[in-house]
Length: 277
Image (cartoon, rainbow, N blue to C red; front, side, top):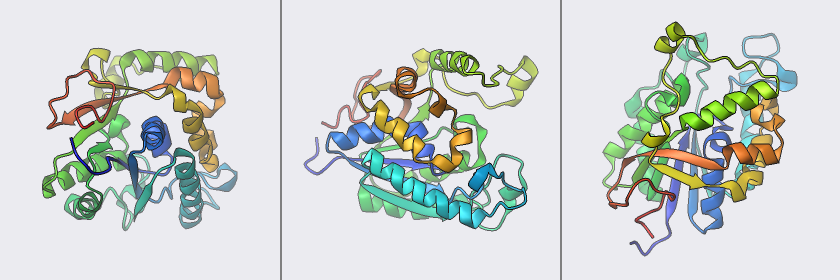
């Protein structure tokens, strides 16, 4: 046990990732009096512009998009009651294979040791007891998510502290339900064939391989509202079509894999801070 305020640090790639991936735990732990720190690595400049204009299309201004998304991110943090927002402000790299992967200052081309050194300074400053980021595949293969994983794990090697470390994931049972709901709402969601599946990074895990299941249903409205705060990206945020009740029913539990631990807390666990309080 420790005698200072407990701290959760979530390291995410883009504005809106904090809400979709960890909005529930950020809201829940803030409500429990835990200090919450969000590190957002990129400026989100490869998102949609006003009117839904896409990256690379005429009228898409990455700098203007980044400014708009920062405002939205700050609004989402207000909804989730995030204690501290830290921006690394690397350029959004876009999807894998886009020319923006290699643009100046893109997060994807940033040396891991540079990003790790900057993040290590934040870890030393905030002394998080729990750190959350993506797995080595960035959950679904996005280059900025992969890079966020890399710099987080490298930063942890640079500091003396030994927080509990978690990677976000989704149980296969939930992914199946998600596919069913998407089809119900008329979204195009087809499972990849075997040849495609071999080429794609795995998404999610079998239920029995997930170490940590955190009930966040009481904070479903906050998570939904935080996603809605990213209004400029609404076309890409399918979850907003469901309404709050269906959304919370589907995503009212957030799941993680515990990859570093010095507490000895038993798994499966239902609290990221198990063994710390």
